[in-house]
Image 1 (tube, rainbow, N blue to C red):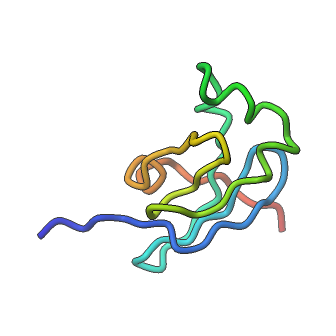
Image 2: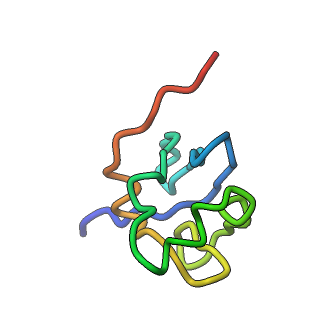
Length: 83
């Protein structure tokens, strides 16, 4: 069976960055600016709205239904966090 990643924890960092923990206990901080194009993601450009994310269906979701597949997040290169 192939590993199916799931986000089990998400913490806001700054800007459009969210620190994610996956079900294999790996962690990374992902910059979501990559996905802020298109009508469903338009509201997320407002940082106050962006920070309203929550976990649902094993990934990060926003109140308008916008989400990014957990396997996409898992494969995304993480960004370095400031010390």
